[in-house]
Length: 490
Image (cartoon, rainbow, N blue to C red):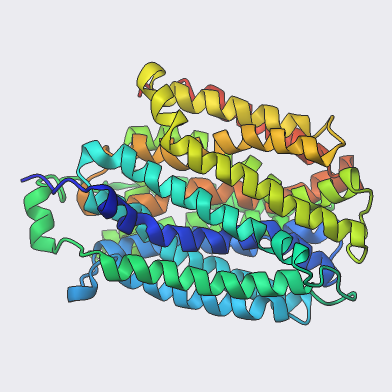
């Protein structure tokens, strides 16, 4: 049997919750550097403070994907319980974030916010695969991308609009401006309301129904961990130890220790999973996830390389756009100055532009190009446009001209959110779509952790006080991702 074809209303209801989730992400991405600097952080410490966000995604998404594949709560369904739980926790974090009285509190709330958004977000990716027949996957992810763009526009514009309505946009040192405070509170309400819309207007297919739709749901088995050797695990642990040694030898930033810990941690987790499988106790979440990592479909491995380089540039943009725009276009690197805060508001406008472009491009430009040159070449073309947008920051000094830069970045962002998932979705076994979508997020998160741990050391060593060179790095990594896209036949 085929799943029923979804009309416009069904596509809307399936993905509308992502509109609210992206409002939360947009507020976080456009304002957290501003919050940290307003509370006293130096620009060199921003990467370390941002570590919480990708780390929580790395830990949360595979686990939530695995659990949601195996959840069924009757009328509440399989994925919707996670939508709702994540939305409630994220709304709480958004309420308390702008009331932070120090960097530690803000960092902990960022950790909570990002974990909660990831709890909601990961099942939404799998939800499209659950609810739509395969030939509707492209349009399903395009609609989801449109809501992501629209939500990001709303979230990014909140402080700018409130400033123009007369809300105070400057605060004493150690406090967050009222424009940011009220934006976070409104965003929390919008997030919860949008997710509730999807929860209340959709009905998930029960496990028996899914088996009639997807005869291949359980045909993909992970490799037998009991047959795997321990030498690769030791290599991962050794790599982590070498990274830690390098921190001491070359006096690198202390947050690089986290990178070593992650490498060693993966090796240790793999070793434990293999030993459990050898002892006949392989039916546990750790063994399942480690086995699924080893059993990734070939196209997922190729897409992982593209995601790695694509998201390295995005994390650079989210961390450094505010200090770059404030310092080079508005003439101030002092977070307590009106010029800096005006630059922060303009970054909200810039982020709303690239997200608005993404929302339109996902439904119009991308399908049109993909029909003519294929999905992979479309992705390469869009990433090249984004790289040009990043490179333009090196030359533009009029903030108005940056709007044109954001058009290229927005086209690339639309493709990053839609094309890899469209190419991947149809190749995944239905019984494991949740965990594989969660594992795919590893290649979104790991580059962010690399940026968060290493970029501070690179900037201090080679470009102290000159953050604009981060944009050159972003342009280069997107060009590498574009070239890697040409290796995929899709």
